[in-house]
Every structure is written in structure tokens, then in C-alpha cells.
Length: 255
Image (cartoon, rainbow, N blue to C red; front, top):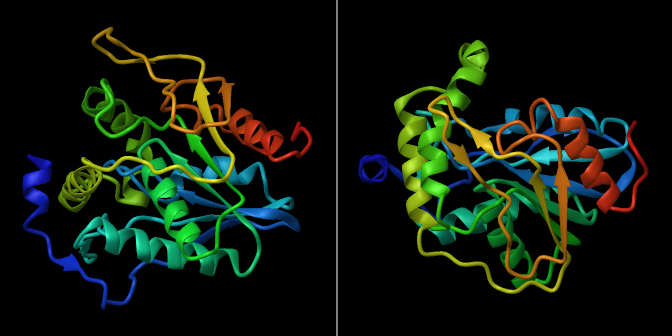
């Protein structure tokens, strides 16, 4: 239903100005910089990386590229090519000439990998790709996770809903639109290190059902385990996740 409703939204075309700019959440002298892509579900936004980036302040630049369309005044990309090209341009603006690593949370990993492909095609290959528990589109359990976990996410952000405006029709239809854009997409091989960071715990929903995650990704060179589950690894356990990412870049412990 969300995908069908998204088809009535105005669309953003290749000739239009890209409507979103990188949001910088952390500064620091170390390279490469991290350019992060939020999930493509209803609660998508830069706030997903707030606690993660707080652990890297003073050490490394962290930028977030929100997907257009989650605000009522924004259009949805007309197709995947428009989205990927626009986000690739934004990633280069965020890096400002520095080497960059792309980081994608859950379904945001689809965007991160697709943008890495586009940057490689342009001769601006990123230094690496880090996926935070990203499944392939159509992976068994993906839609049940979205459907079942959304009430949990909604509850966890309810206290912040007024601040971030995470619960409205624009966000629901944007989620449907992006799930449609990537429904038939599959990642192409990349000549860069790919790290999948997965939580140690499954998602436990109020009904008692247990949803296992921890997916494999084509071409991944490293598989890291961190505390928490798919939803809490960037919330309650953001420090551990940031530490794992930093260690994978060759940094030292943040604690």
C-alpha cells in the first residue's frame, strides 16, 4: 500500500536541483571521512547517526546524506538513477576532496553501495564501504522486520517525534517509494573493502516473535559483531558500534 501511494508523489528529475545537503555531525583531523546513509524506512534521517557520530567528535568528520522525499515539501526521485547520481554528487561535496568511506545503516546500505558504484564509475572510488546490518533487497525477513519492528521504532522515538517529525504520511509514502526503487536492485562487485557490522542479538518484538538479522553481503571482506540488535546498535549501543567501525579503519579504542 505504501509503494502504491508513493506513485502519487511529485517526482525529482535529473535536471532538478538536488534538494538535500550533507549534514555534518562530527569534525576531526583524521581521514578518511565517513559519509553516512540512513535507512530508507519511515523514521529515516540524520538523527539515526547522532549517537554514533558523537563518539567520533574531535577525531573524524562524519556527514549524513538524508534521502529526499521524507519531508512533505520534498519530491521523491523519479528513478534509482536520479537518486544515486544526486547522492553521489552530495557525497563528493561532503568529502571536499578528502578520501571517504561510505556507511549505510540497514536499507541505507543499498544507497551506500549504489553510490559507491557510481563514484567508482566516475573515477572517484571511495576507500571502503561499511554496512550496518544491511540485508539484500528481498532477503527473507526484510519486510517482516520492517513491518514488525516499526511499532518498536515508533515507540522508541515517540519522545522525539515532535522534534524530528518522524511520523507522517510523507514519510510512509517515501518509505514505499524507496522500497520500490530498490526492489530489483542487486549490488555489483566493487574493488574496495566491504565490512558488514552486525548485532549480536535478534530483534524481539512485543508479540514474542524473534527476528534474526546478521546478513551476509556479496563481496564483504570482514564481518564484525557488536552488542545490541538491529534497532539498538545505533542507539543504546552506539558507542560500541562506533568503536568497531573505528577499529576497522585502523584507529584505536574510543574508550
